[in-house]
Image (cartoon, rainbow, N blue to C red; front, side, top):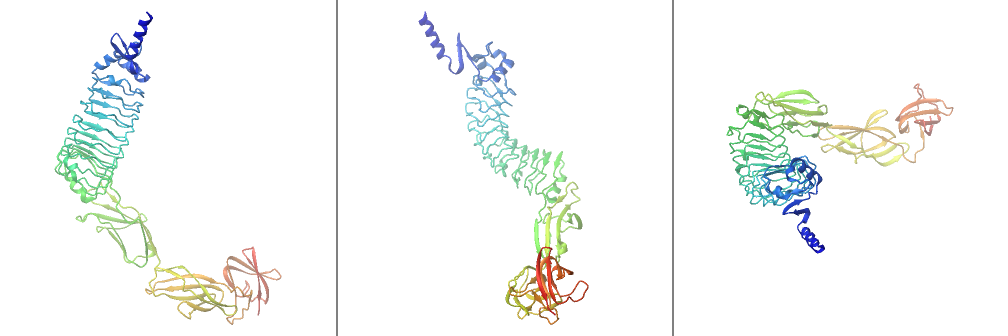
Length: 542
């Protein structure tokens, strides 16, 4: 008896691979996913035993739809037994692996949206498949569909797909939706002439070369891309809906030969009144959205010197004279014209500011074209960028010989002439050459520069005493050491040896030996306090 029991157990073991059990020629399957098992028990009790096992024979014979949506399923093992099911719904679950469908020969429609699938298995055995709906997963591609001429609908939006397989065999394909994928190009669709709906919105696709072949296309959704041209639709006469907003279109296809075209959205492109006005006479549109359009382009930043001439130009609608251009500076209207041009003849520093233009046309009151804001910076005719003073020689009594040849002048047209002006007292100093000046005593000077166009600029600089010169001066009016120059910046207070404040100066400046009341300071020793901190001792001789 023991030997007989052993033989029966061994036989049962060989009949039960992968959770399949046999009892009296009836096959059962232990579904590993609890959520799937509970959903089948709840919704399809005739397929399940009282022990929670799947009746494989019953599953194979079930031809009704299998609806497993919203069931928190992570593992679809067991569905391979539903060989006769026509529609499989597995939407809004937690699947990471696509169920093996090769044995589901009767399935016509597969809906597995809103899962976490990264790939789709071979579909070649599904000879009746007409609808593949795999929206919002993590797919990077689709399997080969060669030989799947039954397929009518492919919807794979919201994935990470970068390329589609060859679709040329899908001669009956009616719907192709690949929106919200990083795909940059479509395969050749010239054989898919039965397409009625093509949705490529929010991808990286910028053209559809086979668009002219899609003569039965009724809906094209290509918004939020980089399309510049849809002329492939020119020969199409069946289009009913076009959503092409948020692209780079600067021209439109022929709409006059599309009698059923009723809904068009072409907003936020590079279209102008010249493109829109011809469409306003079409009577088939029930919904026509064309505003706003992208900004017209002005140079973002212009840096120019006076007194050059300068133009802002908006070159649109060459065939129209009815466009009205209103120009603004710092958001204040300046003028309105129909030329698209705003001229400065010449430009002056007061013209610096932020400019923009608004364009209207009475034929299309619902559209206003606006430009970006352009910044105009107008600089002086010439500018002294930096003064370079080379001390050629220095004399403590008669001053220094200097050369300003290294001075940088921006915007100047050669030749350049230099003139030096003393500030205390004010007087012009003639150079010994075009750039050299002699007997320049310590003090503040103005360097004046003039170029060949008579543009001029001036900049202040200081000349200090030589390093070997003592802190002495003799304000007797002979032109030699008549003042003491203080090159620092701030405030200088001059005290006598008795600590009496005799004068306060804003520096840099030269002390000419006078007191705050205009009198002459006595000869002697004085202390100059710079900004309340550092001090200089100086001797005044009479």
